[in-house]
Image (cartoon, rainbow, N blue to C red):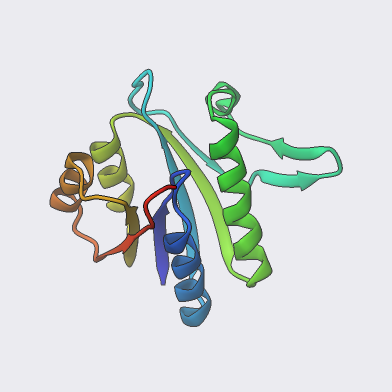
Amino acid sequence: MRILTVVSESSSKSIKLAVELAKLTRGSLVFMYVLRRGVVRGRRVCIDALVPAEEGIQVHAPFSGLFKRLTVAAFEKLEECLALAREEGVEAKVVVCEGEYAPTVAEEARKGYDLVVLSYVKLDKPLREVLERITAPALLVKEAYPD
């Protein structure tokens, strides 16, 4: 089973659930992060590539400038995702895309995923738009309200 998991800084339950589902089905995961500022269409970076190194994290990507715009919290969340997947023996990679949230997630979801895992605190307009646009089965995971 191929699972796409859309990651935000507040995603926790959804990430754990996606890793568990991938482990149970001997599937693979793609953790997707969407940069919403400075919309540039068509720039997609696929990495295996938040690689632990002695001095933190190395990033290998064709558009390294994209990673410079990740917040510390986003970068740490992506590291956490990959570490959890590796700990559970699940094949995983990270995709960082830049664009408008709903169309960018929907475009990635069309690439043959068996399941799309989305987290939410409230059903906002961009999330409803994603749900309207994707054809793959979707699992919505309600996250706790931030303190």
